[in-house]
Image (spheres, rainbow, N blue to C red):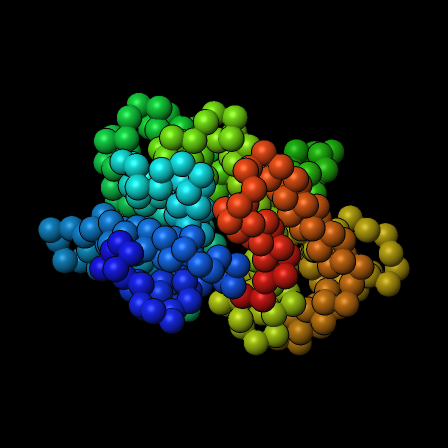
Length: 352
């Protein structure tokens, strides 16, 4: 079901999207109302249908593995941003839907690989591919999705292929930098924020760039939307990391404090480790290592939730959201600009 006919009288855009899409997106309350919201819901339904086609294979097991994370749902944040950027031009122009799907396929592929590197057992509330099958199957499935993304890209032209290749280079560079850590003497916080820009911000930026470019938006506005999306992409990842700490009921999609338990050092922990406040001495001792012990884990989580380091990290999140919002000065006034501004607020206040 696509097109305006997919809407039902009385539906909000979010209800339309949940009704016509399988699985439903968890994109949050910032989805705009009115005609724009309905168009985005219809566009996301087209993306979902194309995405399902892209993960299908002649081999049943390959289809099952490749469709595993698609079936688990997700925010579809990157294709949604591509569709929203396309609204500043011709959202039905050739290539808009396919480019949005390329970005989501790339994102999904990186999740398969990330779960292997992190030895994750759960992804989006379901067993991760590596825990359900094996690390080898998860890695190969990620590669399969990259191949399908490349196949779609081939029809979008050499410039799109080049942009995607450079985006993928940044994704991989960010993963390498995260793995090896900062150079001796380098600022760990600056290193961490660069990793987030490369691993997360780059693909979010390309999503907006693709959507706007294929919709025929002018170069200056495309550049502004690309810069906006990178800032908001980093903000979104920062908010994910903060939710892992402050969420008390698993609303973030994983058990609270998962990063702490696994020894993954996010921005609040980095601020704690770099600080000298005697009140955070015990916190520094705890966040410097993985915390498999339930008692120590609960202690660290409680200390971090009430710490100045958490406040500092929240301030950095706000800075990124504010910088993204400032980029919108180049966007014409209207529903699209309002929706993008609402996104900036959502990444700061979201609870899931």
